[in-house]
Structure formats: structure tokens, C-alpha cells
Image (cartoon, rainbow, N blue to C red; front, side):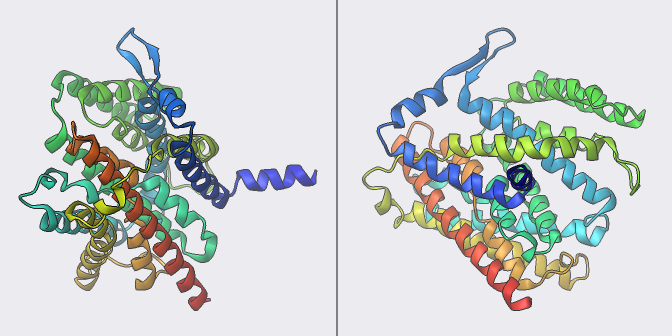
Length: 387
């Protein structure tokens, strides 16, 4: 019984999911720089699915567009619950992650543009705008109760707004073609989901089926399909009762284990396989490297905290509950973990130039490691000084 008890604790621990995720990052990097690299890449590139309805894609696409939509569904459920009955239920608290995310997009993009205007790298201005919600929340979870829950909610909300902003940027500036008919079908699915909520349908199956169709239409529209998870989450019914468990809370409970111990680890394995090549380190000390690294680290911290400070001083917003400015700086550093979405934008920005793509990916990895380690250490130190 002792082993079973510890195993249950492991499965229910947010810290263990963070440790597993970091292990998968390290494992993926080792594989990508070993004799297994070619075989591993072959697996990621292998087409899976059916030609019927045009649903045959490489495994990496299923992970990044399919499984990550489930992750965004869970995060969206948590955000909606907090909006309805928790930390984000007041306008002051809900407005802060929105304005912080705007600052965290504008300032990094400006820093990148400063270093790369009128160069061959200029098109990558959106690379440092994105926050990797999976990795940033995983590192924050390693701190356990040493940081207030409100900071996790703040970072999750900020990262969602950030990623939605990145998706809009991709749709407007990097999408080669938007298929408007599929986008119209996506809007119709959202309407169906809203009506199901309005007429108080309680069973999950009524939402899952149109939710899957929403993902399909969104994916074929040319817009990043993970947004379907957030849209679906915001239509799942909830309540403000402490005694009655809502459909939203039931679904949230069901998704925690598969997301933390299947979806996120697979995502890390598929996206961290960066093969180190000659010249990558030199690329860190050019305009591309400076733009990405300073954008993600300095730009995120300054943008998030400057915009937050302005709105708090204007008494429009307020700090997350039981938090302080040192913790806000630490959270801003964690938001500098750009990784997946940043790499995705880099691939779109420099399509047809694999050598530039590799330099950009390496700079993103370095910046994300520095931001993650710095944010973790600052938050851990501030927790000790407060206790």
C-alpha cells in the first residue's frame, strides 16, 4: 500500500509533471544530437491518419495542433472557472493579464525590430512575442506553494492572451492563405456550442462532438488549430456553487492527468529535438541572436511589468492576490520562455532558409533556458525572503 500511496501522490503532484516535462526536454535534446536523431525525426515526419476528409498529417502536426488543442482546452477551462468564481472574477484582476500580455508582445517585438530593421532577418519581428504556456507553467509548478496560486492564474491568463495574440499575428502576417469557407464553418460550430450552453445542455458529449468539428474546420482554415481548445472551453457550462460540481469542473478533473503526463511530455519530446550545428553559437552574437534573446528576456520583463505598473498606478488593475513586484519580475522572466510558438514563427519567417531557421531556434532555446532558470531562482529566493 505504501508504493500505491506514493504513486498516487506522484500522479496528483503538479511538481512531478514539471519534472517529467523538463526530463523530456533533456531527452529530446540528447536524441537529436545522437545517432538516434535521424530515426527520431523519421518518426515525427511519418504521416498518420486517413486521406478521407484530408486527415493524414505527420506525427509532429498531430502533437502540435491536435494534442496541444487538448492542453489549451484544459487551460481555457481553468481560466473560465477563475473568471466566473475565482481570481479573475473582478475587473481589476482580470484586466491585468490582458494589459501585461500586450506589453509582453509590444516591447519584445520593438527590441527585435531595433536590431534587425533593414536586414534579412526583419521578417522575424514576431519571434520574441510569444510565451510558451506549457513550459512556463511547468517551471512555476516546481515552486509548489512557495508562490501564491494567483500568480499561476495570472501567468496562465497572460500566456493565453499572448498565444492568442501570436495566433492573430500568424493569421494576419504569416498565413499564406486563409480558407474563408472553413473559417465560416468554424464560426458556425462556435455558435452551436454557445447555443448548447444557452439551453443548459450538461453532458460533455454534446460539446465534444462540435468541438472536434471546430478543431477540424479551424485547422483547415489556415489558422492555428489550438485556438479551438480555448473557444470550446469557454462554452462549457459552469456555476458559482461550492456544493454542486459543474460540467466544467468535471471535465477539468478528467483532463488533468492525461494533459500533465501524456500531452505535455509528448509535446516536449516532439519540439525540443534541436540538432546543434557549427556556427550556431556565433549566431547568438549577431543581430538575429540579440533581437531574439534580448526580446524574450529583457523585453518580456520590461513590457509585462511596465504595462502592469501603469495600469495598477491608474487604479485600473491590481496585483495578483498575495503577490509582490519581485514575484511579478520573476513571472515576467518565466514569460520569456518563448520556445514552441517562437520556433513556429521562426520557421514561418525564414521559410526556405534552413540555416537561418537553425540559428533562430538555437537563440530561442538559449533565451528560454536563461529566462526559465532566472525566473525560477528569483521566485524561489523571494519566497524564502518572505517566509
